Length: 562
Image (tube, rainbow, N blue to C red; front, top):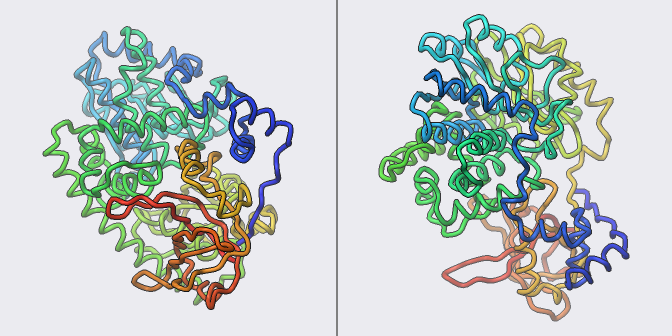
């Protein structure tokens, strides 16, 4: 691990913000590091309001999208709400379809089959629309690069409205409206919305014609917050506002589908981390193991008893997903070690019987071990399909674009992408991808990095500091959980490895004679020798509250030890 200590911001900016907010300089420094330098910026950050959301009509083509939907309603056309099979796609379909059904009955949903149709808009989906007399398709979290598919639909007199957040290709599809803030010609003030977020802006725009206010759309924010958390988009701007209020809905008055998932995990108040690691994987499991329709059924069900039944089925899919994930990860690790590929700049593995639904998770697991841009391939029909994951700072989408001559299709983000290729192109692509990464990646990117916000002493860790840190939530990219460094600390003698395979570390740490803190270090069990016999060490960690048997205490979540 590289420990990257964040440079101290300009002292004058810290001083001015400290005085403006009447807070101590330590907290002011954390805020300035996050780009918050004025009273107004701090107000928006600490006290977000729904009025901070932008006018949806600032998005290019929003007026065209609303006009086409209103025309469809007036002419009693059938509207098909189409979306990807992951969390962002299924929440977006659930959000838009459930809203449209409150104003118009002729609405249906369609999630492509991950295995039969693959990612994004499919010819099979368009044929389904044609066979069932749908003349308008609203595509969510996909479609921005589906030029040929949209042309095919146009021949069948089916119009498309695309709501996507992925990077466009050189040519935009000929849809009635293309809502994507990443379009070069779109001046929308915030371009980091997820697919569900863009769906939310669409229903917000539709509601403005019906004298609805933003308050009418609060019940949909549990879906938006779930998508923001799952899709790992920046926790800034509109995303932070939507997540902030969405978490309130999740904890106070969630839709029955979300409530059914919460009932299974038996936790009182959920934070964004719980959504990422508990709610999202269960929604994702439907599309990974069975079909994304099961997630939409759950999220649009308004009878709690029925929702509980759906959630129980999805829990079984999630258990299957975990088993497959563990099995395939072991097989992939064995393949890498057998082929002695640890010295490469990339990790690229293939086995034709690997389950397509979990290869993205396996790619993330392999990065945890080898920390290289990673592709995990499996056979998908006549093609090889892969999920790509990247390391901090390296744009895997750009690397795939540089090798696109070998690909049938690809799409995604800087850190996660999907692709397909012909079997005969696999080895050539693998060599080209290795070459591109080797030539473009900075050497330090191949070592995991921990960014440290500040060095502090244990006597500065107080309940007041914990309360202030909680006000920085919800955390996510570009608003990370603060990480602190403390030097010259020691274990009180009770440190031990824990967990079924003793991979974790449990300590009680002290600095000088100050108060001791409970500390937990996941996957740090191998470092127990560093702390043995009360040897001095330094640690980087996050500060959190730990609740046990009704008692709340401060706990340090260790990131690394030296």
